[in-house]
Length: 373
Image (tube, rainbow, N blue to C red; front, top):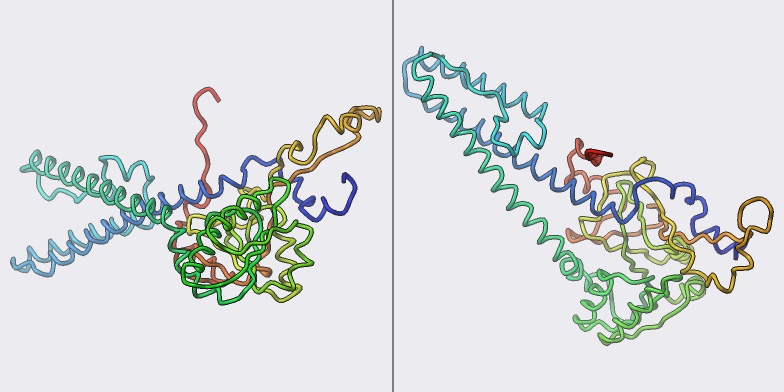
């Protein structure tokens, strides 16, 4: 009820954060944007490194006289230094993908043949730009394929974690969890699944139907029965909306309650998440919104409570307030293991794993204001 103890634990301390601009579902979108930016930077760095290697090889294999060799070595050193400065102060990503030079141009040694040298440099720049775009497109296509197949890659690890005659508890509905459990059944594992219904949207009902349709023994329970049933459970396996850099998890509402129950009874709490859900931000970052409020109509029928929602108190506010948070934050100390498409990882390792996917320059992604705004 409005003043009961059920609403408060779900995240009343997060309600004040719900007024911020960035919603949780957009964290995965931001992660993918950052991954693409990282791909562009990595491909450009790869081309720059290859160019430096080519200059060094040319300087070593030069068979001209000592004076010419000294001049070429000096010229190569200047080009290497220019490329190094470009690496330390990378240009804008827009510049990288345009037909403009990324590193400093090699200085001309004479005025003769200036037109031919200019054309040659222009052709080299254009060729490099086309090569960079081609490599970026290939890498982005690989990223798309990884996102599409991440459920399968995570499910392949199910047989390593689910054993015979175990009882698994999950909350709400997650395609990753569904495929993970079904993969274990396909490996001839016999186990039972408890599904908490995930009120007020009752996504657990959908998951329970899917599990039964695939031949898994399933028991549907209410969210309030989690603590009563947790003593019979061998493992909790859940999905996530986002995994933060500190190993914390943003998940459907009620997940923190499940994690606390699992910790109380020493039950492993396992989180399944594709690499695109690994977020380089921390919960305290201003770009992160830990919760959002859904429509109160998911909790009650306004027709039945219309007499409680008028402004009869005289203070200008309704007598009944309905708070319907969508997400919970599970701290890393409550998580036993993360299973991603790259394998299993401890919460303390997540920040190192995330560092491989993103560039430090892209952690804060801001939308450019459009004309007229």
